[in-house]
Length: 168
Image (cartoon, rainbow, N blue to C red; front, side, top):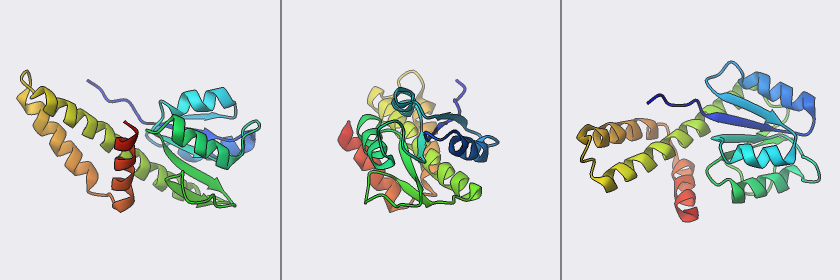
């Protein structure tokens, strides 16, 4: 079964801001969706691996959007983009404006890898629960993929994994 490319959501009301961040990610391995429409933000975040929030949308401030997305799309990693650093949480990373395209891509790469790790970990647990009677090699493959992905992790990545467990 082919794996889909991770989706990255770029959020900002200002079209030029959305275009700037989208163009920094377009040549990458991600499906990039950029929007400034409040309903689209939440719907897309529920399916996305990473959301980069660069500004307000409608009546919601960047901080308010980050809070809402952390509550209603817990599987989506959040990047706060802007000159004003939000208070601790609910984001996974913050990049100070003006954001260097290479820094944005490196941050998205890290958080997307973490999201793929969480997906593989879920699959590993599900396979272990089923005892892999129909495909005994599947459990081994999933375990190996999971170990390979976690090689680049730090303590904040593992803390994020436990936050997801708490949500479930």
